[in-house]
Structure formats: C-alpha cells, structure tokens
Length: 78
Image (cartoon, rainbow, N blue to C red; front, side):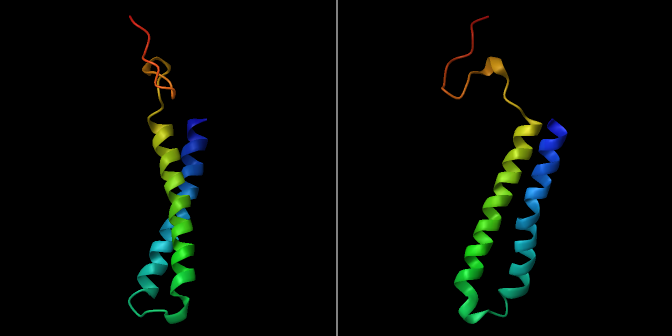
C-alpha cells in the first residue's frame, strides 16, 4: 500500500514540475493578456503537486497509533 501511495504521489508531482517548466519559458518574455488565466492554471497545478508531496510524506512517515489521534487525545500511558 505504501508503494502505491508513493507512486501516485509522484504522479501528482508532475503537474507542478510541468508548470515550473512553462513558467521559465513564458514569464521572462511576458504573455500579455494571458497572464491571469495562466497564473490560475499554475496555482491549480501547484495545489495538485502539494497534494502529491503530502501523500509521499505521509507514506514515508506514517503516524503511529500510539502517538495520539487527530482529535488531540494523548497517547496511552505506559
């Protein structure tokens, strides 16, 4: 399961990488009237990539069950 999460996370990183490449090409020359839509598309792509980064991070460092849950409950006493 961890392998699938990492593989899917890497796939989700690709839109952000592609956006960075297009930013390098388009921004120095300026795009004129297409600036706002391009920036919006780039932001969406970076949001998708952030999801991929988060998925990879959680797959590599899963939360332990004894470390407390999402509700903030303290870990059980030992």
